[in-house]
Amino acid sequence: MARYAIFSDVHSNIEALDAALALTRADDKLLCLGDIVGYGPNPNECVAKIRDLSFATVLGNHDVAAIDNFGLAYFNPAAREAMKWTQRVINAESTAWLNSLGYEFRMPEFLLVHGAPKNYFEYILDKAGAGRAFAATDAPLIFIGHTHIAEYYALEIDGSITHKHLQQGGEVVLVPGVRYIVNVGSVGQPRDLNPRASFGLFDAETHTINIVRFDYAIAKVQEKIVSAHLPEALARRLLVGR
Ligand code: ZN
Image (tube, rainbow, N blue to C red; front, side):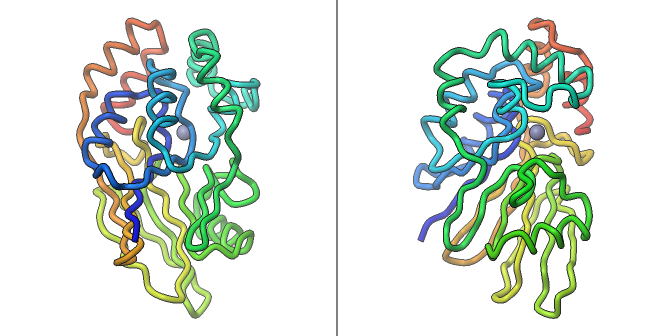
C-alpha cells in the first residue's frame, strides 16, 4: 500500500519545496493541491519539479490566475503585483502544463481539491464550512490547502464535527466510519503563525496522516524576493508565518 506525500501552496518557493522533498521517500506518491505559483520568486522551477515528480496535481486559484487572470480583481495589492510579475516570467512550458490540470482528483479513499469540494476555491474556515464540504462529496477523506493553515475537521459517527489545529504538526489516526477534511498547510507560505513549512504524509496501510513541519532557508527566499523586486511584505511574512 502506498504512502502519499501531500504538498499544497508551494507558491514559487523552491527552497521550501526542495526541503519538503528531502523529507519524503523515493517511493512516496506525490500529490499536489495547487497554488504552485504566486507570491514567490521561482514559479518555473517549482512547476517543473511538481510536473516531473507528482502522481496527481489539482489547480489552485493562483495557478488559474497565472494562466488566464482568473480572480485577479479580488487579489490583495501585494498578491496582485506578485501575480503580474509571475505572468511576466512564467514560460510557455509551465503555462501549458498548468493548463492541462483539473480542479479535483478522486481516488476511492480520498479526494484532492485546492479549497473545497465542488466550490473549489471556497475557504473552509469553520465547522459550518466543513459541514458544507462534507455534504458536497461522498469521499471519506478530503485533502485541502488554500488557507495555508494546517488543521483537520472530522465528521464523527454521531454527525457532530470536531476540529483540531496542527500548528506544530502531529499525527491524525483515521477512525473507521469517521470522515475527515485534512488541510496539509502550506509548503511555501505558512500562515498559522508558525514559519516552519508544512506538508502531509498519508500512510494508506496504517491509516495515519502526519503533518510535518520543517525548516527551510527563509533568508535565501527573502533575498530572492527583494532582488526580483517583488513586494517586500511577501518576504517579511515568511519569517512570521502569516
Ligand atoms: Zn495559496
